[in-house]
Structures are given as structure tokens and as C-alpha cells.
Length: 530
Image (cartoon, rainbow, N blue to C red; front, side):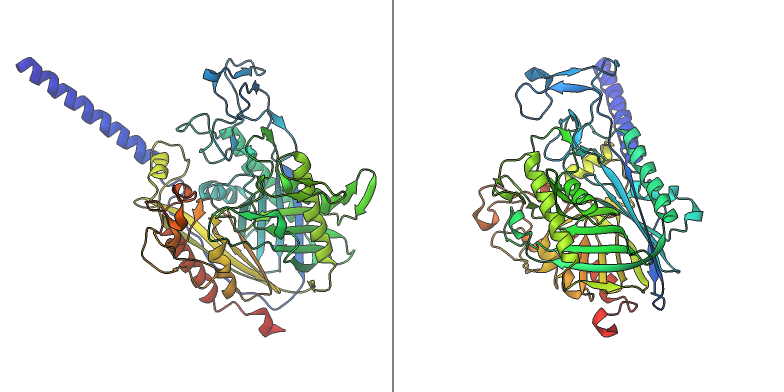
């Protein structure tokens, strides 16, 4: 009996020691990577004056060396099913580039087109703003802060924004899409490469600063047939929002920024090639023109083209059920293919170029930048995300008990407003249409009202998601649905909540953004100035 008690005592001590070690590991993994870091910026626009703009682009394409054989053709690497890899690197292991989006355990087989860090820098003589557009699934805020801290002071950057396109065919930068559920797919070397290339592009854009004038335009309807909403209520905003920068002296295009509310995932889930998806052809068409064989169909604008993603929760996509018309023939593509992706990107480029030359475009040659940005803390209610943070699957820390630091920003230039949020916002929060369906988890009416775009005072209202962070889906609280019976007669829980921080994310972000916009006495409606 004494021996048994002694063994039990030692077992208890070992178990206690193990628990302590695991807790210490968890606390270390959840440590704040940038302790004390906070953004709190208020900049009033100076009197209208000369505006400067500079653009640059750096490739961030990964090198895919080791490849593999997908025996079942299911786009998932599983050696137990006979999948094999080719050890080109000679390391004796599969040095895979794990692709983010759709599912984990999806190694790339090669590169179809380059991925990019494309940058615009604006300067009104008082404020210098940098905006990086990445071809990436998303980037955590701590990694964005790393980029900011790496910028030399002599660049004079007052605020840097990093937005991800959310392409589903780029390397994992978050940890969710590795070889297994609890194995990160992030290659630290590639992550550092993306950060350094982003910083290089910012520096080059600063060196390229030129006196500039700006043209703003929208196309509200032409792209409507290219998007579907996969979750009720059906709310879609198909508008293309466009900003073109032209050299004030030569008239040449310095750069063109396009914002659209759609997932760059048209190539769909079985693709194993690295690609930026439709933004590749959109940018190429804007820069070089739209060609049909050897015939130039639409002249390009030149300069550096940038694509940024809008409000894509819900979710906004070009699924195989959505047909894309070829801009040159009567072919309509439904099944995922690079022909479909090309048709979509080039047609969007044509819409962009046409809108900029249309009668409703607005041009300014003088102006000033007003800017507001805030750090915010958001509760981490998602248990899977908590576990991911604890075991180090996510390389991001907490700022308090189960709280993530994130960020929002709002700035104005002439007739245009630019709002930046950190996730995949359900479009009804931005544009209206929130419902309180029967059987939702919370007995409440719509919380996130009024719609954000309604309170933005400018004529052109850019809302860009996945900016300065990536926190997943931002869902109206009255539509939150994890417990049966489910809303709208669904037989199973709808997709979205599993990749959201929690039900309070929508209300908290909406409230913080309203305060950022409405509470900003520096913000003056464009209509009041003209």
C-alpha cells in the first residue's frame, strides 16, 4: 500500500510538472509580440496643395522545388493514400510550399504567375502614407508591425497600411493550412522574404514620388454577374472603385488602384499552382492593355496596377456556378480553369479603363490627406483559435486575457474616403440588409447599424478588408448561428462562425469604426466643400 501511495505521489508530481510546463509553453506562445504597441493617429488635412505619389512593385513569389504526385486527384497530400513527393532539394524530407485556402495539406506543384507586394505612397507635404497590397491569404497584425518597424526613419512614412488580397493560391502566412490540423504551414524564411520585399517596395515608391493628380471612378453594375453570395441574406455590392494617379507634368499614369468585393479564388479548390488568381490578369490588362492574340482590344494605362479586396464575408465568390463571359468570344466559362480566371481578370480591366474615361469620373490636382487610425482589442471567443494561439499554431500574441490587438483606419483624399478593417466583413454591415432571422443564437435585432458606407461622407467610398491584420469573418450578431435549430431552414450550421473571433466582433468593430468616422471632427463631407 505504501509503495502504491508513493508511486501515486510521484505520478501526481510528474503530472503537475507536466501541466506547469504546458502552461508555460502556452503563455510563451500567447505572449504579445509587440508589447505596449498602439496606434492612435489624428491628422487634419492641410489646405489643398500639391500632391505627390509614388508606386513600386516587388515579386514575393515562392520557389517551388519539391513537387509531388496526387494519386487521387483530391488536391490533398496524403502518403497513406499513395501520394509521393520528389525530393529535389535532397534533404530527405518533403520541403513543401503549403498553399492557403480551402483546406490544409495542399502543397503547391509549381508557379503559374508571380505574387506581388505592390505599393502606393502618397504625400501632401504634411503626411506621408504608404499602402502595400499583398497577394496573400492574409497577414497577422504582428507581422504588419514588423514591416513598419523595419522601415528606415529617413523614408518619412507616417503610417503604413498592409492589405492582403486573400488569394486562395498563395503560401500559408497564418498557420492554418499546413500538413495537418495542428501543424503550421508557415515557412519562416518565406515570411521574412515577404516582409523585406514589402519594405523594399515602400522604399522604392518613396524614391519614385512625383507631383500627381488623381482621377476617381466607379462602375456599379458591370461586374454584378461575376459574383455570388453563398449565405443568406443575399447581399452583394458589385461596384468597382478606382483611383488613378497621373504624373502632373507628363500626364503619364503612375499607378491605378482597384477595389472590389470578391474572393480571388476563381481557380477554385483543386488548383495546385501558385497564382494571384484574377488580380493577375486585372493588373496586367490595366498596365499593358487587353490583347486578343496579337490584336490590341483595349489600350493599357501603364504604371503600376494594384488590387485590394473589399467586404467578402458571407461569402462573396466566383464559384463554379458563376459563369464568366470571355471578353472576345461568346464562350461562357463555368468550370474552374485559368481560361476562366483570365476572362474574368481581363473583363474587369476593361471595366476599370472604361470607367476612368467615363463622364462620371472626378479629377483633382490639389488636395490634402486627413487620417485617423486606432488600435483596438477584440475578444477571442473562438475555442479553436484559442487552442491555435496556445500551441503556437498562430504566431501572434494576446494583449490581455483572450484578446487580440487589431487595427482600423480611415483617411480622405479629395472626394474619396478610405476605410480599412482587419477581416472579411459581411457586406450587409457595410451596405445594409442585416436581418434577425428566426433561430439565430441571439434574440436581438440588427446591431451593426447604420451601414458603414452610409456614414462615410465622401463621394467615392473605398472599404478595404484584411488591412493591417487578418481576424477572419466579421458577422452580424443577429445572424450568428452555431446552435440548432439553424436559421433559414438550414439542416446544418452555416459556414462562417468557425473562422470568426466570435459574435461580439461585429458589434465592437462597427462601433469603433463609427466613432472613427462620425466622431472625427476633422472629417468634412466632400459635398460641403464643393
